[in-house]
Length: 277
Image (cartoon, rainbow, N blue to C red):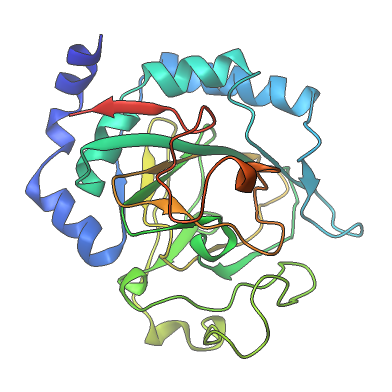
């Protein structure tokens, strides 16, 4: 099966895509997934929504007309997610884009904006919220519904090369992770959008967006007749090591600091190896 999957994604594993990923920190790959794989994710998402984990949260305000639902780390109990992760070709793509000999699953992330959700996902990088260090990583943003250019995930091309910026809580804008003043603040991108190389795409089911965990990204809300169900996967490569934090990371891995030393490779059952080239 692995040979079949690897052959299927060969057209995407080319120097042009690799160069774009390394330069911009993000690429959109069209129709990577089959209809069967997308349907598998749809089933997994609906099962997830019906039985949210203790890690789930409502990421929109109570007065919002819609609802933004997030959940994390469900692949071990959600059979649809597990089948998709281990039988889809995404780990092959991740290994190529990361230029890594090993590909480990880091975590899965559900992001659902129900119709009329006004909540904006503000500009941010992902890696400062995590318990890892290193450069070889790749996230996949995988909508199972059509997404308009207005509601899509947007990126600042090349921002993954410019260092870490201050992570803040999305609803309250608090510096809950790094102390105030220890990292450079994000610029006010929305006030000066024309000054930034913003990338974003209309998305159809089967398309995937691949991005580095330090690439700045954001998303607007959705319209009254639009549902935006997204499954996100994060993979890590050879140079990623464990970095315990004195705060609760997002997602949290309780007790992991007692099992993996700081600076250790992410060799743990929570982070299985997907592929060895």
